[in-house]
Length: 469
Image (cartoon, rainbow, N blue to C red; front, side, top):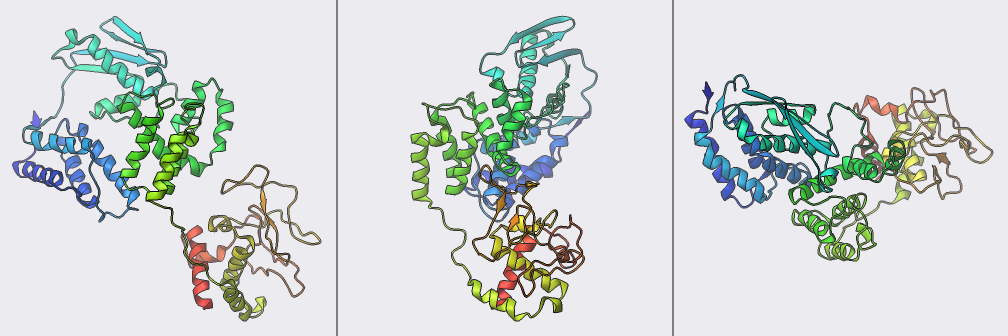
């Protein structure tokens, strides 16, 4: 028994794909609408899952560039256009089956970093990977092993329904869903090894150099979690770029890598974002001509050219007068007469001015283990629990240039929790009330901002700046 789309549904999908092909710059919303139509038709289109991935990836990239605005326009890649053309030419004859029935024969396959093997009806075969293939991700190798196994026994399985047994669940899922796009970040083989890092290419580079997993786990700490998350997307695109061209992503030539940067440039990425892509590649690409990738003369010249065409603009074009805010804070009167919310707002503003820290740091400040000394409160013994931005080696605290400023180690500061906290009294001494040491600063904001995060601090500072004027 087979399943096929209705004539009305078929015509609707065909016209939508043709319209998208004829539009030089469709909106992201139009592309998303067509993708939704295509995926909804999969139950009646057997090979549909093979012909929409590039279209979906183009949409995802465009959304990142356009900051999630679906009304902005985008450009379709040649691969995406090819997929749309397939739907136009094939949708009218497409169908699917309710069940493929019992398999005629069973084939087992397996792969490792050194080679692959398979068995059909007790007849084994296999082979070894070449130097380029052996550096591929294990999921890629498992799928390639299935392909080679089918080719090896093509004379025995032609026009037969073959059941494939593989110990890699990613590969099994891929074939069950007729989907050949394998997420490089997944390795669900039977060994279930713990990944060194969330960025497989970095972990693979360290392993290929003979570094133990214990030592590699220390090395990857050089990249903050936020940096790894930022690099992950671009390195995945880099792996895909190299895989499509049969290039080793660890040791490419400089021209290939620059072409990769230029693809993002054509998509409209800014100078600073392209610098991030360059840094991501520098973390995995081996030195070229005795230069690291990021410092290669051709790469630096290319980035300089990008700067000329798309100069980086300052994030803030103006600053506000601090004296206006200070004057307003003085006009509020004694701390003992302020409400908890006003006192919290005042403390937030003073911390922002005195410490010069970012909102995400101020958000998590607390007074745990803070002690008073003769001049300034500090915690000279315990290092920082968390570091929220990259700092130079040995720097675990921050200070203010003001001689009367309160000095706080990182993640140690004045806090407001269930009771009021006085920043300083008439003599300039730090005075605190009864607070739990692990209470985060600005908890009072929870009454007004249930989703308490760094944006809460940012909005509060902006509001007080506005009120003070």
